[in-house]
Amino acid sequence: MNLLKIFVNPLPEQDPGGQVPEAYSEQLRYVRKVWNEQTFGLERVVRLALCVIQFFFPILLIRDIFGRWGSLGRRLAVEFYTLLKFLFPLIVLWQGWYAHPFIIFLIVYFLADTFVHILHLIFLEDIHAAAVSYRRSLLLIFFHYIEVMSDFAVVYTAFDLLNRQMDPITALYFSVVATTTVGFGDIAAKNAAGQMVVITQLLVCVTFIIVFINYFSQKRSET
Figure 1 (cartoon, one colour):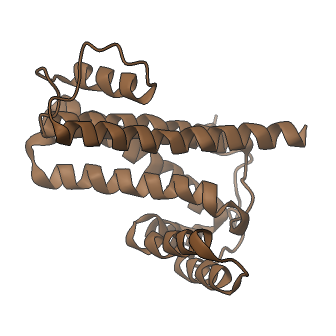
Figure 2 (cartoon, one colour):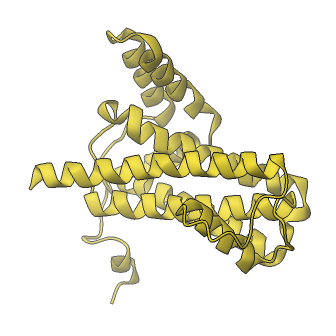
């Protein structure tokens, strides 16, 4: 039994998905397309900003490098990067690495990368290619959602923003409670900085709700 069939079926032969455009050139075409379209005001500014900001994150480099193996190689690389971002904050919490400034920088950087990606799904959905699979898209969004909760758990712990001593489970517990807006009240932000981080987390999670609703409404319209 070929173990590769766990991840890919049917197995590619020579070209695993066909030639794909270089990621940076493709993104530049998106910028030009948004620049030349007939939009105005905040919508235009936000769409242009999102197109440009994408150049500051590694996803374009990943898509550019692995695009040499065709669209399949690019998609698998993007999935691996998503899993890496999902696992990284969990490892940081359990290993206690949140005391290192560079680790915290990476956590915030990956969090910003994920947030920009979610905003892309909302404001730039029309310029990107159609999703390969509805279920795959929802699965990736779900991993991003868990990643965001874990990222904020690291931030709460690293900067001591809550009113009790944090361990990995407690930090994740509060982050999940804050994300789902349950608000049991047993843990709370202990200062203004903590309150601002909680507000930021809630705003980020609202964007996920918009994306989930959008995907489900699209699926209903197709059926």
